[in-house]
Amino acid sequence: MHRFANPTRFLKLAAAVLPFSAAIAILCIGAGLVMGLVFSPADYQQGDTVRIMYVHVPAASLAMGIYVGIAISGAISLIWRHAVADLIAKASAPVGAVFAAICLVTGAIWGEPTWGTWWVWDARLTSMLILFFIYIGYMAMWAAYDDPSRAGRATSILALATVVIIPVIKFSVEWWNTLHQPASIFKADGPSIDPAMLWPLALMFVGQLALYITIMIFRVRAEVDFRRIRAIQMAMAFDHGNAGSADNVPDAATAGATGQG
Amino acid sequence: MAEFFDMGGYAAYVWSAYAFATVLLGGLVIESVRRSRAAKRTLQALEAQRPRRRRRRKAADPSANTSEKGVS
Image (cartoon, rainbow over the protein chains, first blue to last red):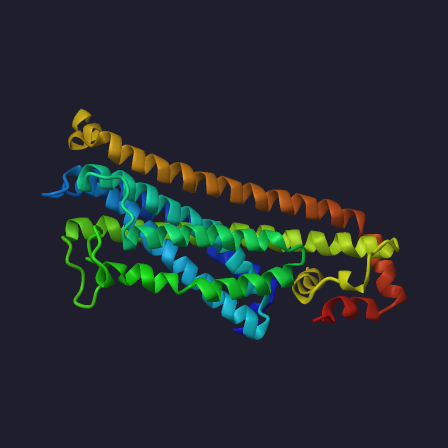
């Protein structure tokens, strides 16, 4: 794993992955949309509103999965001072937040005709809303520090302290009485959903996962470049003799990136 | 075709859900690609300003580069 702690090596790997992740995202989402909107049947209870599920369910799983990924990256970052773990976590957060927003809004749009209400303060909906706010707080924490290594430590601790929301969301439909239906796909005895609906759902899930990876790679690239820019600007300020103090020496993450670049 | 767009009477719900997801994800893709391009451009401009000073520093003091690497 330490082989990938080097941002330059990670960027090389990412450049190799990018064309595939982009192609998989376009193909799977394209095929998923056609199957989901055209060929899959309407639900016998929900009618055509069931098609909202093909966006809603993958977005919900990814919003949760990405946050678990961020928390794991946080642990790796704290334990091994792994520079790439920080980069991936920071780059993933806006994608997770967008998926959480999509999950909440498409869920409300589906709820109005099906449940008769846009929103209820029940366990599943409320815990998902809290995850959305956690994403916002996590991103704000990144923005609050100038020094990336300090920001990395603070956000890692925040992620580890708040990741408990994920099992709460997952099991909310079992622990409490909620309006939201229990799981029909990710459960012990296999999915209880017709293959005609499972296929577009699976394609949309893979497509949105690939889209996440694609976006994340672009954002990691931007972040690595921003850190190099920061390191160069500090070195320039240092050269001119107007650096504030020795604290301004770039940290390992930025210097590693600059040194290898 | 009209039947397809009508979505069994739920057109407003189904299409607005898909439109919302498309706008958010599309916007995020565009913003992320632009951000990485802008960062790359700024970095290249900065590096174009700097190479002479860097080489000079390295030649004068071989430890300059290691001190940059080694902290924390």
